[in-house]
Image (cartoon, rainbow, N blue to C red; front, side, top):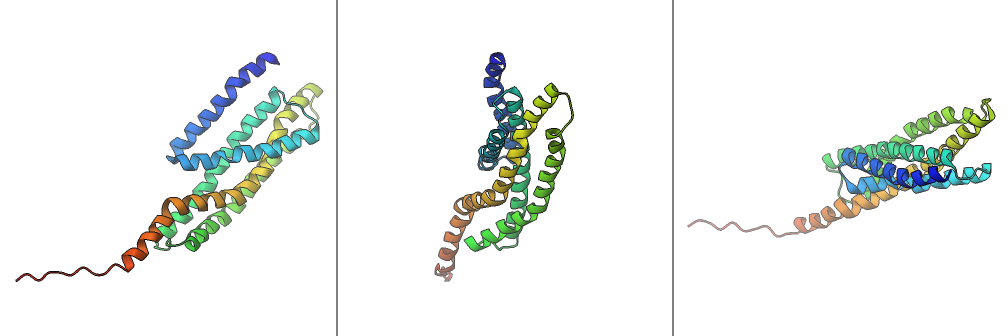
Length: 202
């Protein structure tokens, strides 16, 4: 156990670094990567709550489940941002992105479109992991598998709430301060700018 813990000290940061690198190569945006990684601590809340309810202590199997949970969170977070970006870019191309109300409408549209896929993802994960919790395998194998599955089951619930409630709010704040707010300040100034006089050529 001590040797495994010494390895996990290096494995967990390396895993998070690889996830960070893959997300950045996919999104090309540091802000989007940080938004996606916000799912990890929120999902850990559900993971540790379920571990506490089941009376499981931290072990190698539990840490393996937590690492797998981080990968699932990154995957679903990227899909959530994809829906938000599509709704935002479409309204921006149509010329309907001039105020905070326009931004909130676009984010609401993208988040609503994500409800069904997110629920399907959560149910697919649960349907694959819940049978492990009631499996009839040998005692040793069942104990290991249950400790791998428990963090993922608990983390999926809190991650589901995060991606539907917290992600849109963070995305709105980011887009407002980074893109929409500067444009909304420039447009009134341009609209009230006096027309330039064209000097007549003698």
